[in-house]
Amino acid sequence: MTPEKVLGHPAKILSQSERKAYFENGYLLKESFVCKDWLERLWQATERMIDESRTLRASDDKFDIEKDHTSILPKLRRLTQPVEHDPVYWEFASNSIITDLAEDLLGPDVKFHHSKLNFKWFGGGEEVKWHQDIQFWPHTNFSVLTIGVYLDDVGEEIGPMGVLPGSHRGEIYNQYNGDDEWIGCLSDGDLAKVPLEKAVHLKGPAGSVTVHHCRMLHGSMANNHPNKSRPLLLNAFSSADSLPITPNPTPSRFNGTIVRGMAACHAEFEPYLGRLPPDWSSGYSSIFALQQEEESL
Image (cartoon, rainbow, N blue to C red; front, side, top):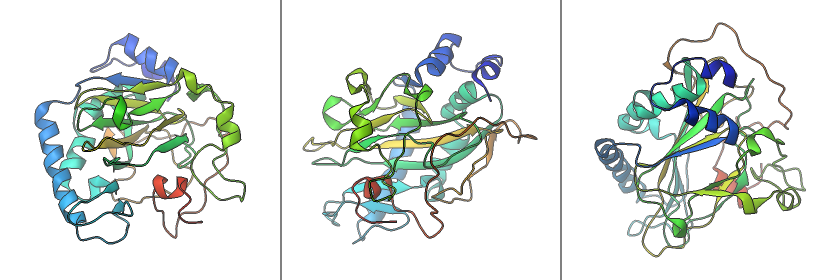
């Protein structure tokens, strides 16, 4: 759905100026947006996931762990598709204030795409290199976004997400390396042309929400805080008329579920001028493993 069409529908929780700012800049930050009760429920589910991970010795389809992860000191990079693993996550994604937020920016008919929980563990939690999301899961149009929730306070020292305002209206970059292997981030040559001095780092107290457009250039530094992690719960949504071009790299029974309004009768198309991702039907690891080139595809 085009921005003009979206803005023609009444908003639920955002002002019209906030909606226009999102379409102009490609991102929003809403501090202390998620209430305390929801944060407590999400933390309880997350603590259950962390405890379950303690027995792991290697990453799997559910958990992506750091190399020095142990039962005594777990170090998680990602929980893949949390909506699959605890009903609290799905309730939050499908019927909460963030679903209303998605509706304000995508139009009345909203479809769930996927979820993930990135931990960025203390004491060296890995950076996320600068990248765009749409190359991971191309759609027929760009009415696709990701909503992040900081489960704890996020300051400069623990690697807040950085965005480059306006980059969602620019180039769709190639995210393969010189050996034609997918790495899910910009090459050094492309990154050198990006004005990173204009980046905005999205900090805020627990419950703050980030929203970024599917073409937004974004990334974050490593977390070197000695005892504070940066759990960021991410849920991606699209307008119902935006259809995936390629299979979802992390399948879930909830992929494609309509969470607001109705299913679309027609797809809306915009030219997709980026290279398609690899065929991930044989499996997908995580953006951390790919960007660190821990494995080849």
